[in-house]
Structure formats: structure tokens, C-alpha cells
Length: 116
Image (cartoon, rainbow, N blue to C red; front, side, top):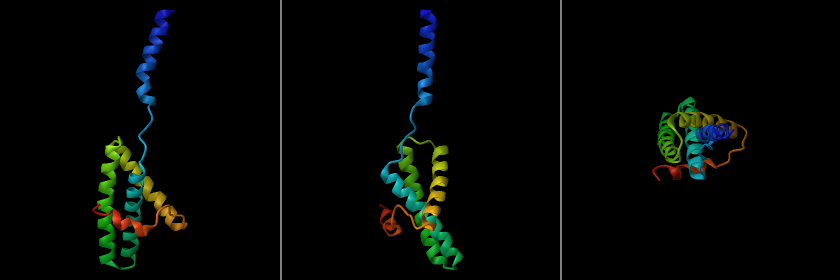
């Protein structure tokens, strides 16, 4: 009986890391990732409108903030596969927020995050 209990405790101890909480996205990483996605969509809109210069500006900002956000997420304990998923999730979320005029951040604050 004691052996069975000890074996059960050992198995539980081995399984605990699998049940550990995943890292949380910090408020700073959230803002950076949100702005990166907003610039991604703004670049596409500018390109669709034929404004190549504005599209390139937004695209550059999106790339820079995605890189910064990736570094923040990596430092927060996220692995690369999860970071790629998060980028896709933000792209979908931000598009929905912008389309429904329910953006959690004002896009006007996003340029201040570039080269911060």
C-alpha cells in the first residue's frame, strides 16, 4: 500500500510540470503586439489605396514592433511556436477590434513605441 502511494506521488510529481501555468502576456507586450498588428493592417489598407510610401512606413513599423514584441514574449517564457500563434491571434483580434470600432488602444499612440 505504501509503495502504491509512493508510486502515485512520484507519478504526480513528474506530471506537475505539464500542468504548470503558461506564461502571461505582460501589458507592455500586449500593447506592442497590438500596435504591430494594427500597423500590419494599416499597411495593407494603404497598399490597397495605392499609397506605396505610407504602406512601406506602416509595414516597417509592423516589422519592428513584431520583432520587439517577439523579444518581450520570449523573455516572458513563451517558446517560438507559441509566439507565432500569438502573432496570428493578435492579427485576428486587432482586425476585429478595428472593424467594430472597439480598439483597446488608440492607434495614434503606436508610433511612439517604434524604436523605443
